[in-house]
Length: 214
Image (cartoon, rainbow, N blue to C red; front, side, top):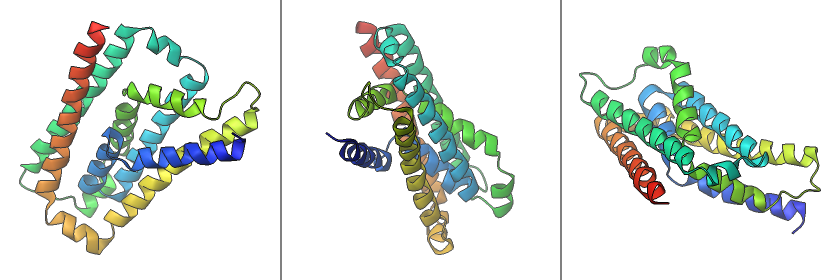
């Protein structure tokens, strides 16, 4: 497979993976709908920073260490699941407050650092990403690949992810669309919170019991 074909293949695969619902997409959605466009973008940037962490150790061959260290993989998975449970709990609890709908003032003053770290932590502490990226890079990386091509691949993967987030965030924060979401803010917060809780519990159960039996 030539470089152009392989590059097109992995970018298509990554776009599909980005669009499909998962912990990253759920936390970006939650931050966007709860705190506004700016928080969603910052959270998406945090997820993309996490991608660079996974890409870095995948390219460096450190994924092999995770594959042979059950305890390390287990610990990362349990921590990541616990953090999702924490975010889900906060979302559900916030939906029962007297005024959960985000205001412009709240959007402007919302902690950007908090949104960034939420995206980063959810992405980094997901061991499945290690398997995903080593599989993805196996399609295109070869010993003869130059640094310029490798850098191009990394930039395009991150760009695909962030472009999808920006598109989604822009659409759901269009005033006419946002009004429809705001009218159902309680339901949205509880649904996204419940989804994060379920994902978190699933991750904890998977890595606490399945990995422990390996």
